[in-house]
Length: 317
Image: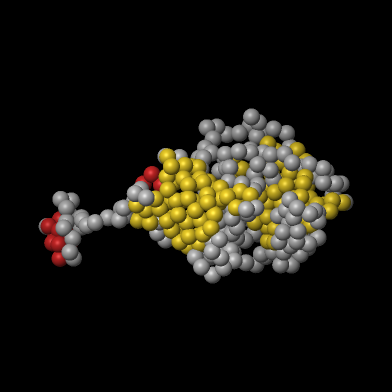
């Protein structure tokens, strides 16, 4: 009786119904080969810039997704339109200049590659290419090597500024007195455990980019609610379970373990992110080559910040 009534309802609503009792009708074209995560490289006059896209299926008919542009956090895509010629979507602006939507067009070149164009809210249009993002699953738990002190407490040996340098090393501290360039290690790393201590003045903002791609947020957020963009969050993707920032003027600590895409963050002695998957890159990443080792990046372009006791324990090969 239920199946028969359902078919009658479908017919009354204008559908044709099918043998299973589900309303049937025309489905919008969609290409399920697009499903998954994609690491994007945008070609700009200033050089290649990283981006990221995830496409998922919603119900039987619709494609939805998430997108990270050159800067900012991931943004939801309410619908990805696709047909035999490719796909396209539009999302509102975030930190880009201009008032229009950010629009993306693309197509598959084979099962693992995309190509297309992106038009930013200010009307500038650039071409891009993409590869499927690696899963980065590990078949076994890592064996850890010896802890390595990345900052010697005296100078910038082992580090370089991405632009004109404002960082000062003295008295065991690595200090950025004002907004300026980001700082990266000369060495790159795969899986690791990281200990870092930091201190900031009121209203300041920094971040620790793991492999130069995934930001652990550093920000004056005491008393705020936990969010992906707040203290100890993986920016744009993973919120901490609680916000444990210490009062201004006190040193905070992060102990971060990164194995493949899986991250654990212990902030000021409390586990606030426990073995969670990082889906993709943070806006402002150095590149989108997620499968490769990368440097540690300290954000220095958002305000004054001090770091000390930066110790990294790499996984053995």
